[in-house]
Structures are given as structure tokens and as C-alpha cells.
Image (cartoon, rainbow, N blue to C red; front, side, top):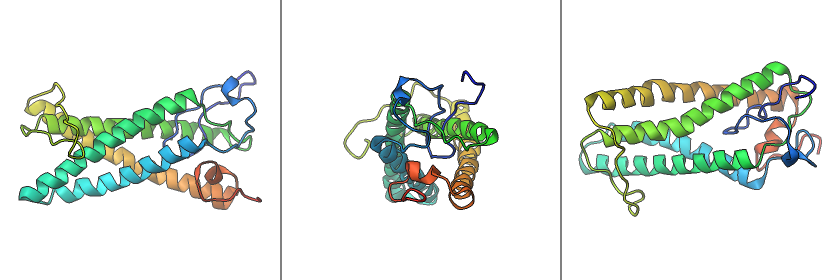
Length: 212
């Protein structure tokens, strides 16, 4: 920004993209304004799907026989849905910049928010892609997405590619997601209960504005 201040994404609304310097898309929107309805719907839909996907992923690994195949089909379908919605969320976020940050946000909060939001996009896009790579190199056919849409393999093969995808999927991206969730929840609680600011109101569909 011209005054030397940082211009980044709002602190800790899940799945947001880093803020760019203010453009005409921000005109008429006061600092701390609420996100659009589409942004809020995508935000919470993806949040729920990601959490469900983590549980499904851990659950189907312990199954055997036909039940495991059915659970794997669900896991794949959820992953494809998350990938599609994440790309839609990214496109919407670029086309419709977030409302300006409240002026009360400290510089360290802005920096941490930027890193957190970039990390969430790494998770939302990277986890489905690495899962797709695992499935593509498993030697098994891929089930139709939601039993309707035929889904192709990625053009990767070999045991080395399979192991690399598993390492990224489980040991790196899943662990990153765990850290980001802790940061996200801690930040949201801090803003709501300690700072008593508008952070939750900006993205949550059910909270009233503080003081409103």
C-alpha cells in the first residue's frame, strides 16, 4: 500500500486467499465488512467436506473386501468434489477480493493470516491431487465419481511415484492441515473472545455483529 501498511487477507477466515492491494473491487466496502454469500457458502461447505474426508480416509483403511471398495469410492468422490470447489473458491476469491481488513489488525496477525491462507490452499488443492495420484498408481481401476462420472487416472505410474504421493498426502499435507486447523481455531477464538472484533461475523452465517 502507498502508506507502507501490509495488505493481506483477513485474519483466519478459513479458506480465504491472500489479499491484494485495494482495488476498485473494494470501493464502497468498509474495513471489516462482511464476505459475500457465495464466499461464506463455499467457506463452510469446504470446511465440512474436509473434516468428513479426514474421517473417511482413516476409516476405509481398516476395512476389507467390498466394504473397503465402497468406502474408497466415497473417499475419491469427496476428494474430487473438494478439488472442484477449491478451484471454484480460488477463482471467486481472485475475481471478488475480500473486504478490507479492520484497521485494528496488528502487523503480525496480517503476516500469519497470509501464511495460513496460502497453506489452506496448498491443503485444499494438494491433498486431492496427491490422493488422485495414489489411486492412479495403485494398479486398481478408479470408481466413478458419485457413481455417475467416470474418472480418469493421472498420467503417472510406478512404485516410486506411488510412494512419493503417499508421503506428500499423509506425512506432509495432512500434518500441515492439522497445524493450520489449530492456528485457525485459535485465531478465531482470540478475535471473538479476547479482541471482541468482527472476524467471526465477517464469515460465519449465524453470528451477530459484535455490539449489533
